[in-house]
Structure formats: C-alpha cells, structure tokens
Image: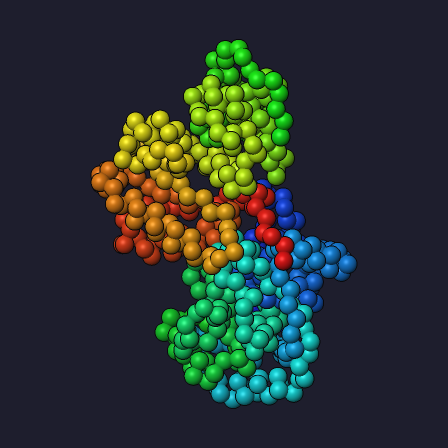
Length: 237
Length: 240
C-alpha cells in the first residue's frame, strides 16, 4: 500500500489550510489515538475490521498490544461496538482502477466494474470481527449510527475502510478530507447515485471516491454524470 | 460532596457577589468566577481560596467535576438566605444532566470570548414576563456583543442514543414555540432575539448549523451552534 494517489493524474490541489483534526485539548476522557479512531469511525468511514482499527491506532505511534488494549477499553466504555460476521474480505488493488478529471472522456465503467467484481468473487468468505462507533458516539459526532447495517453490505464497508487506509498510508492529503456522509445508512431512501466518499475542500466536494464492485452500472453512470455536471473529479476502486 | 456547619453571619459584599453569581448560574468554577469578573475574584488563586472559604463556612458545597476543576454550588442554607424554597432535593448531589447543563451555561456565558449574562428568574419575570414560567428552569441570557442587546435562548445537547438529527427537531420546536410569542416577534423585528445550541463536538455543531441554515426561511430566528468540547468529559455512554 504505497501508491501515491496524486501521481495517478487525480488533479486535486493539496489544501494547505487543512489538517487532520486534533483532539480538542479540553477533552480528557479520550487520548489522541482514541479520539482519532472515534473520529475516523464517525466522520470518515462507517466501520473498521479489528486489524484495520489496530492499524489506525498504530499510526498514532503506539504498539500493537497498546492498540488492542485501547480498542477493548473504548468498547468497554461504550464508545465503540464490536460485531462479527461471515463475509468476503475486500481484495483491493494497489491503486484506483480509474481516475477521471473534468474534460476527460468517460472511462469504460461496465468493463472496469466487471473486472472488480470478478476479483471479489474469487475470495472465500471469512469470519471477520469489526467495530462501529456506538449509537452514543455517532450522535455525539452528529453522524448516523452504522451498527444496523445489512450484513450483505459489510464487505462493501470494509472496502471503504481499505481505501481510506490506503490513502492514509500513502500520506495523501485526501485521507484527512474524506467524509462518509454519502455512504447510505439503513434509514436512507434508495437513490440512483451509489454510495461514495466525498473529499471535501473548504466545505464543498472537491472529489468523489466510488467502489466499482459495489455499485451498479447505472449507479456508476449517474455518478459520472453528476461529476461531469459539477466538474468534480472522481476515483474508482 | 462536603458540607460544613451552616453560616449564621451576614455576608461581606464580596461573599454576597460570589453567592449572587452562583445563584445565577447554579454552579461555578474558580476559572469562571474569575473570568466573569465577580467582585474580589482578581486572580484564579484568590477565586479558589475564596470559594473554598465559603465551603468551610457552610455557604457553598464543593461538587467534583470530571475535569481537574472543582464546581461550587449553593448550600441549602445559602439558598434559603437567597429566598429560595428548600425542597427534598436541596443539598443533594446534582444529576449528571443538571451538572452538564449548568456547566454548559456557565461556560457559554463566562468562559467564552463574548460575554453573556444568564437571566435570573426574577429578571426574566420582570423584563420578559411573557416568557416566564413559574417553577421551571429557564435558559435565557442577554448578550451585548453587538450594538443592540439581544435576548437569547440556550439549548444544551448532551447527546443520546437516538438519531443525531433529533436535535434539529428539538431546536425547530424551540423556534416554533418562541415564534408563537408576540414579544419574540417584536424582538426579532428589532434583531434582538437569537437561539444558541451548545453541543460537545465541533463536528456536530457544524452539521446542526448547516441543517438550521436550510430551515432559515421557515424559522426566521438567528440560530447558532457552538461546541464546548469540555462537555465530553461529563457524559458517558452506558457500556454494552
């Protein structure tokens, strides 16, 4: 996971004024790694597998055992919830399968989607433990609770986590601007647009990230049309 | 919580000012009393010393807060001397919700850049009688941060297990309720009324602000959402 997303022709300027939010100093109940994890699970992506969550915590300069203990503490204190289910682990490529910038021709979405779906179909389901922000935590951050997700969507949500971790590991400025507001929550009405991560810049979307394998062809076409109309670049994984 | 023998002597003007300040907000901390410019609270150390002296004399009760600070509330004796009715609840520890709400109000009025003053029951009854409801806690303040002094209503969001956007419905209900008062409509014409929501984290404050901005045509009352991160230390979800 060492791809620099910027080198893939994805034309978003780095926002000099934007940094990953630090824990407000007045909060003493969470330490910095704990805050980062809760912020990630509410504002950036809907869920993290246990290994992904430990990965996020370890990026905050802490050992594996400390990270595992911190996860347990956050769960025991009611800030996180843990679930387990049988699902496909998302095998993600090392780089996005498609990058589109305004003015360019439309990628071959149907073909790319088929390739992405074939890659998933080859994997066998695994018993995976994952974490979501508790109802209370989600409310506190002003985000929907993600613990009532349909089990069939867990693989998709793990894929969002993989993409996010990829961006973080690559040191990309995109990771700290991700938000998962447009990832469908159980209460949201069905719509044409597929779920996507928004990369925000000064309050407006500067780019979108979509998942080929977990979107319909019509959804991808709608996403392309939306981005074309609003001149927003997108990345498809 | 600690109580000592009741006070029987007259209050010194400085003590009177401290007790009046705590009676207004229901709670104070040395930092808030100092920042609010309460008479005699010239430094943080002096504020702490004077508040502790009043605890020893039985006028105040020290209430441990989740942060490093200690909170101070009026003892039943001091409440009685301020003309408050003594009930079974007087002198008992405050509920978590009460502590959070009182701390939020105190912080909003005394520890923020722009100073506000919470109205006491008597002030509300005297100046805005239409909004006064006997026997119930109120959340009105006055701010002079702009040229025109404004009356404000404060709602404190301490989180819950429900959907995050239920707070939008609550704030909308507050707005609807206030718009039904002729007094508030008159104040609005003079740009002298506002509503503030306090929420612990800036992320939620931003979302509420966005949602309320979208409702500005329905509810023509200025609404702002402010984060007080320290409140996170006061609230705890129940472990699963």
